[in-house]
Length: 224
Ligand code: DER
Image 1: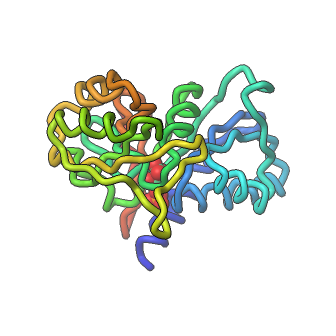
Image 2 (image 1 turned 90 degrees about the vertical axis):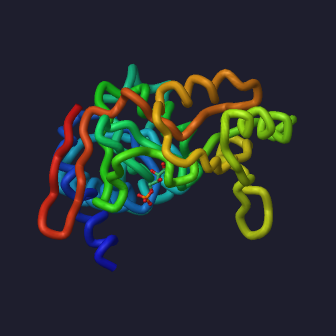
């Protein structure tokens, strides 16, 4: 589809920001898929890099395409993390977690000197919130956690997959929370993270350095 073409375009563009010797945080999702595929080709041409994957799916793609993997016991930190997003606003704040990997994605994003986000134009929004905000919660007492999150002003559902409650790579559940337009993403993130039982939120605020946006006739770069 055209959207796939745009994801491929920005995935390939992002590979240009990766230099020999870098340690890379590998995000998750179908846009990152194209970046990993492109990285594999550059590794075959002699590029020396190592990546830390943010999900089992990403680790599988890295192995499939020949991108060497490492882990946090072997690196001092990461030079750059490249990841997708579900929504990007004008301040480069993000909603992430559509693919269920938000916790490890935030860990590798925070571990990197630079965070580059790759999206097709459909993800760029005026205000965050139309996309239900994913919140990762501990399964123990999740019903109490959900009740406290609702008090912040949302309806929510427990994410399920094949009629089972979806379990993340970390053994937790995800609540998809419909807050509507989010006026102050930083504040909401802080309010959510205070709730006992909330493990991590899909709000990535004040941490994105570059956003590469693919549209049908061009690739544009947004910088904070
Ligand atoms: O789950 C995530 O945060 C992913 O980055 C995701 O939401 C973006 O996925 P896509 O590139 O498949 O749209």
